Length: 326
Ligand code: DP6
Picture 1 (cartoon, protein in one colour):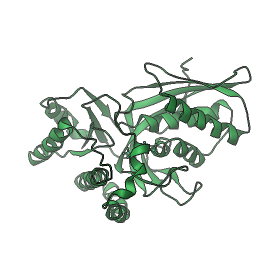
Picture 2 (cartoon, protein in one colour):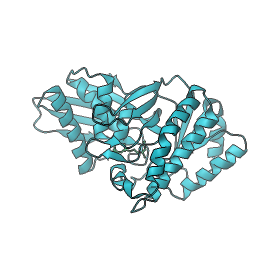
Picture 3 (spheres, helix red, strand yellow):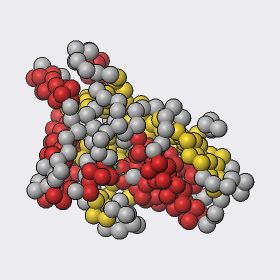
Picture 4 (cartoon, helix red, strand yellow):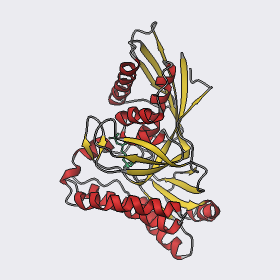
């Protein structure tokens, strides 16, 4: 049976950077994110006795050999759990540039996991789906549940999973993703995390995350946007400090990134409540409340070096949809 899933990318306010177990993709710390309405992956999966090998295609682009390998490993895990041996056809499509620090692997593995199990007719509880998605790419577990999501780091395969903290309708936060470079990042997240323990700042970040997780959840309970934004920015800068002090150091920002970061500060001084967060790439996520989005978009027009802007509201998690890609 053919099944298609649509899964959102997610933006982390408290970030995942570093693993305690690379094979299981167990993270060193808890993280917290929001699903993005404007950046998602659609994937159709079909398993059949008539297929003689796995076939994996990306519409409008090309997967590297390594990416195909990761998808096939994901299919193997799904086959193992469902107790079948058939090969599969996988066709996938992203609405946003792959590898540019906007988490295509997160939406990709979330969509693959949901569509894969559904196409085999397996009913898997949400918690277990998040565990299977995590094994493909850590942050993918956060693209399965609804809205605002916590990934509990856990201490083994069964206890490291994601759950919804608030539904997508809870708070009208906007994430305006400002793309300043669409190319693939030079060092993948998986590779970048391998040397995380070489940073002298890792231990202080890991100590800071638990109180930060508590503080941001409190700010979200109170819908205190300023506090929420301050904590988000603090954790972003903390993660990048770890990255930049690893050996070899990882610098994901470019000139346009830094220009936007300083513009955000001046916009705040001009009473526009906006905060930034940045993943493993140069593109900047600008966070504001719905009431301030129009003003923020006017400000973004004054920036140099912007290639594209993607508007996001909080989105639901991964869903089965009825239109197939083949
Ligand atoms: C910087 O989930 O892409 O975006 O588990 O190795 O596939 P792997 O890493 P991935 O890492 C995402 C890192 C980040 C921060 C975050 O999204 O929490």
